[in-house]
Image (cartoon, rainbow, N blue to C red; front, side, top):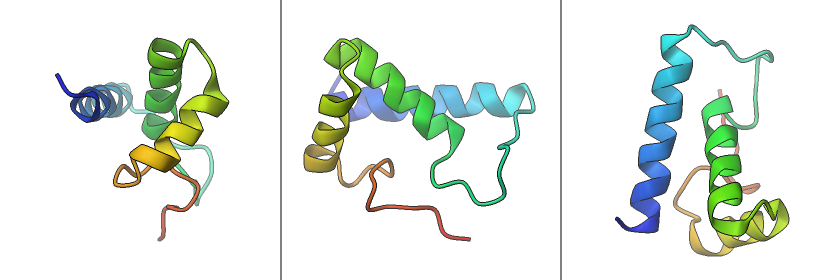
Length: 76
């Protein structure tokens, strides 16, 4: 499975679980959804051995089309 496919499936799974348990975001205007953050942390742990800084740099450089990056924020 391609890496982007893994990331998208992981996000969908996490988002479904959070919705299933009735999870609500604690702020009114979050910059990222909780599912995005959890997916990013899973990616960082699995593929970058917990190096979150390297994982974020990789997301910014190679995965700009995915919504988790500092240049993409949620708009209401």
